[in-house]
Image (cartoon, rainbow, N blue to C red; front, side, top):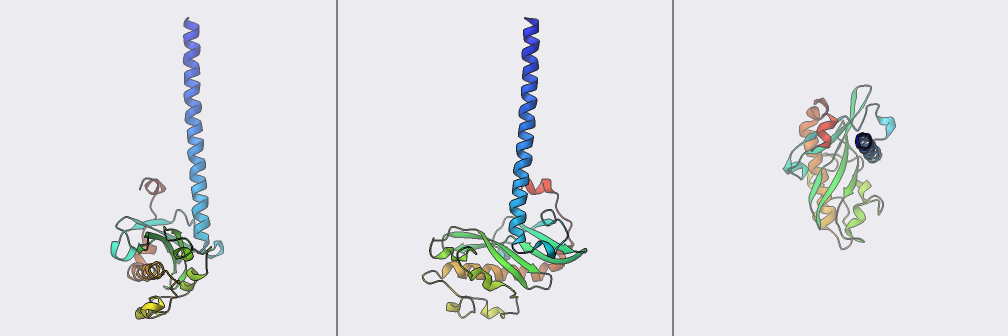
Length: 210
């Protein structure tokens, strides 16, 4: 009986260790997959040849409900080349889409011009508002290379409101919300440019537990 008890105890220890190792390996695989997906999304806006730093880990969080569309921390990734600032990618929000919040990646060069914008999450109407997706239309590319001065602030609107950006047939609220959010993100960048590049990156442990 003693031998049986020892054997059972040994099997239990081995089983526990195997479960722990499997869990750790699974967690590492999930983290690696998440990192790969994130980097792929960031590289749609800041291409690999534009930077030589670790784009995923060179990240900070900032908060500004008025300009960034949410009272929660917003992530900002920084791109650098030879130690010099190249661009930031700000994960801002358009809170006033037709069906709720629209989550964006807004890439801004160090000089304040837009590299591009992508929508990464939304609940807009299929066939109407979802034209904000790069896969559905070219509309989102209309922001490329614009800045706070181009167009001037009074024209940072959809055409129906007197601006330069197209609206969608039967869906003006959605593009209007995105245009406003991109403009506000540019304003935030202009106000905090130096801080965004100068602040130390936040540890990955903090990123995972936000």
